[in-house]
Length: 364
Image 1 (cartoon, rainbow, N blue to C red):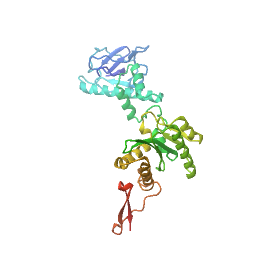
Image 2 (tube, one colour):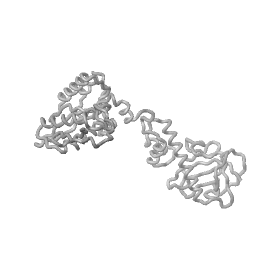
Image 3 (spheres, rainbow, N blue to C red):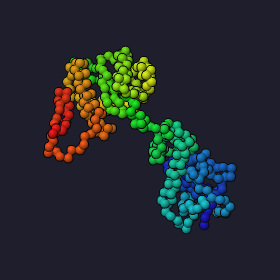
Image 4 (tube, helix red, strand yellow):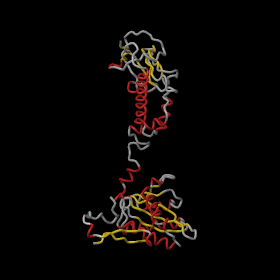
């Protein structure tokens, strides 16, 4: 026989009693185990709703009332729901004995997962600024207890981005789309043989990958930093280049007066978040390359020698070093045509910075 029911699915504290099926105010099925069912409540007609977010889309099985039913024992678990949901929301009670209890439990768990997923995605869709923790709190208020990691996984599997920019471009997309107009700045330190620490200010263009070492000093006071900003603007003007954004971290040397120099020229200053080097990834990668390829392998006596080797490394990066973003080409030149006849060519090495850096070229 087919029994018209109204059912609801919930996670219990011990993952038991996950399904309740009702006919009017009469319970016709309780899930396996002894744990209480969370989030149920009776409406005016005596039917069970899924908390405040009930409905068929949230995992509630509905059927038209009007058929008689014998009241079964509560807590039987199986075989009271020993069948599958059929068209019209009716539940087939099945033959005596029905399927195994494990099949019923698997069916119940799957129904619960679908219900929770539906509610999570609805809350995320209707509240764009909510993260997975906020959604988890709202679910708890509805009596639906799930782990925050489960909410995060549901959003991830559905392709829902992190709040609060679900519908807008992410940070990586912004950097890619505005690469031609972004200039990134940062300080890094270099140690001399006498134990002195020197602060080096460098920049890199996101689109061109051209590097420039602006200067080095033992004391990066605000007046020195502001002067470097003015020098940079003059150099950009002389080169006919135009920057829309200047990206740097929250170093104390980058004062408001430093930013005002660029803002007066119509350039937007973007400060990365606190302790978030990945927000300035291109500059950070170049600094890492400079350390690994040069500074960690060179003995530098004084600041004058430091600037000499940094200028040579700058020229190497701008004229020869390949960049993945440029399809392994150097900033000022494209890749040469493929060489097919190596018999008439020789690979020659050119040493720079005292032999620390090597360049290779083909010579006929």
